[in-house]
Length: 266
Image (cartoon, rainbow, N blue to C red; front, side, top):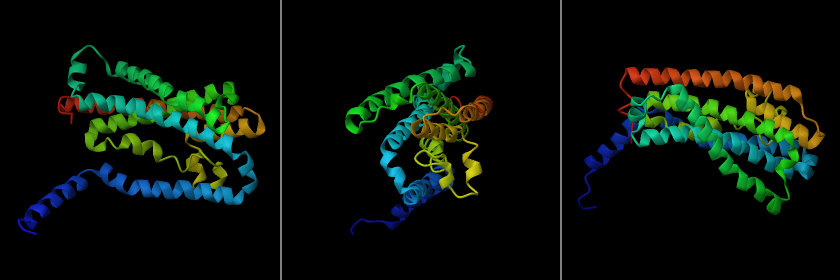
């Protein structure tokens, strides 16, 4: 291996080792996806093994769950990635030289997230009918309640992620994807919460999305709209949205004091 200098190879290895060591989001990402896949599909398998009769009705529920999950995922991503795009463009400093207030930016990010989510999920919702004979709009007015609750939860998570990116820099940008998937195994997207271990169920019930997916199954299988589940989702969403806004504003204040608004970028 002529010309191969192991010192230079080791220097590159050392550089990226230091990069991993100084960026906990990168380390988290390495361990996260295998663990996520194990938990999610392990719980799905457990549910189907215990409730084989449910399979006859599963198609509509699973596809509806996929579409509603995408509302949550896209609303989070629509907000956090829109914010990150301003960092990539090194535009934060210019934006806040203008009269734009942080609260006005939050409102704008929510509106953009709403538009991006509509654009993302609408084609899939219509294609589910010819491909799988599933019409998600059969959920009726309940679909509107589910949609907006999931949007609000996505905004809350997106604001927390955006605040963390302001605090830790672009090394934390992978949280745009990681943060929302963190809850996927325990929020009962594809299976009821009762499938989870007993010690894990209380954690599921502090998530607004858990109430939405349980409510979706109540509409599909029992033809009832459970108001208790709806109000549970609304209550937790209000708390989490308030927390998300608070974290974003706090991190923004720290970034401004420390001069990070002009330093953020690729």
